[in-house]
Image (cartoon, rainbow, N blue to C red; front, top):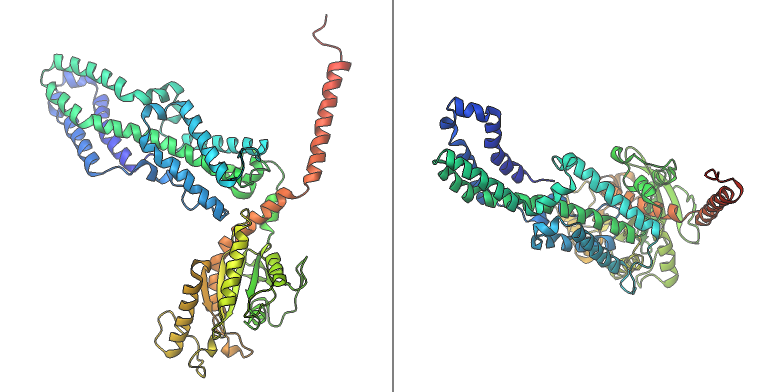
Length: 524
């Protein structure tokens, strides 16, 4: 979008011209109003020049619409890293000339270079990074880029409905033809009134730098938007999310009123995503309090619903969370010892993580053994690194048995551990701070809780853990969305191939009948 600075400077530049047009050239001469308004043009243009010096422009690559930002919620860590390549291409805009920024061949060249750079990011070992892309993926990316650029031009660029290709190409040499036209007008004005010489010099000193800046910013805005949209959909293409076509992608990730045009009638993706519950996996050592946490979340002493398929020890529970209620599935993974998880246990935990949208790392607050938990979290992170198509779910640390922290005989909740004053609050604060420092950014939050048979001793589930889980729900939903979309794309692939073969066969048969059996309508 055009910046506020450009609008202000452009408005000051156009104000005297508009005033002259409104009042009329004829009226200015016949009523001698020119002697009263002669100051308006040099004053406004001087203010324009002064503001352009004081109000410095933001570097083009830092303009708001140019920044890919953190990216959408469904992007994986690999996608976030690829966004840096887009920013590198955007920062090059300062080196380009207006002639380049109005040349279609230049945009084609930049697009090809960006495509190669992103393809090599996703397929670093491939000799030909394009070879793994399918034709529908490439066509979907092109269609989405063109649609978005069309919408942006119509909604954000003033006068875009009247802008022709010739007008656009003229912007590349705007100062040249504008200066010739302006010099001709000044010659005529000086011949009519020699006092216009002063206005001529004020124009040359104040307006020329400003018009050049405005021209460059307009061209840069279009280039930056082009690179941003192109890079965004190239990331979606290389991540495999466009293999179902543009319509199915928009149904899942761009469901909004301005994206309804051209939709197909198949809403299976949207229905499967909205029906998908949030799945939370519980990971922790033996006797860390996972079973008590399951009872606290899913209901008092509720029996397990079933076992996770393809596992023998991962129990699955279901309950409602939040308002409006969200269907939540708990996966209780096998507890590991202080020596760490065995190969069999890791296999069971990884099976649960394939279904999980959020992970609760349950730890005994008063136990100093943390090496096994740290290794387990690191191994889980490494496993997600090896699965680049999966988005790493948020991990929340849950410190249980905080009632056993020093002083052990004291337990009178609630405790303001974030601003500690009592010894117990200091102990809880130190335990949380230690875990945060130990795991770093691996844990999005750490919640201290107490689970006990006596209700009066239960603390932290509603005040600490639930808010942390609700805060993670948006990211957990994005993980669920991406996972459901990937599953839907891979579902019934063989049936789709047979459907395509049947349709192409019927088309070939129809063509053969039209060519061979039906008489030629053009024959005499």
